[in-house]
Image 1: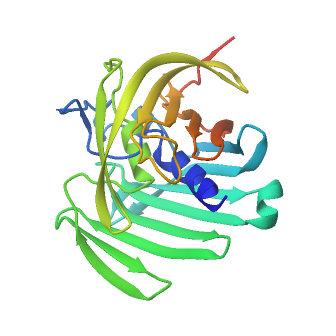
Image 2: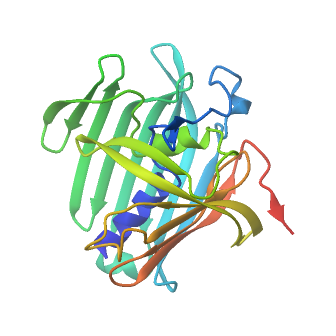
Length: 276
């Protein structure tokens, strides 16, 4: 169950299109708008709040995850402060309590992160880590507050962290995607840069608790083995509108299955188009 809860929280933060090397079939993604335009042109805004309900094998309530957008400044530059939190509930929390806190700080001008925080407590397994990004020097400073260590690691251009990646890619123009296209993604996590591929499967209408919603369907390539059944066991749907919010995530595991459903939302930057 430990891996299941951690995976849920990871999926909400990462999956909806989780990383940054903004390429489709080797070509750069065209941004929805230049970041220098007013904030209302972003796919998200200050005050956006999303809540996801997580369940195991379609019947066991495993927990909830939330994501919130705030604003801040750093070095006299405007920035977003994104908070992602996850918590186990119900029966799961009785024998395996989880409380996770992920935060990222990213400049509005570039949507690149300059600080990432990861504080987790998963059944007694804890981690307190902070990453400071220096994109000019192409360097990431990893501070392990639990062990009181500091490490430096090289990074590539335009690299994202686990949480900033979602918000970076939400602000890209995906209208020209065709079924079969691949998006190349990269991210800095656990002291190393990681590359991913995300397959676009096409458009679908998804049933949510709010009604039917037009969605874009993706399938990231994941590592088969102890957690997933096979390499293509994970499927993600995001709203096919200007918000590009995660609607539904499904995964087939080696034992059972899991899903995350959008449960509540507020403060969206654009209309949420529900089909009645």
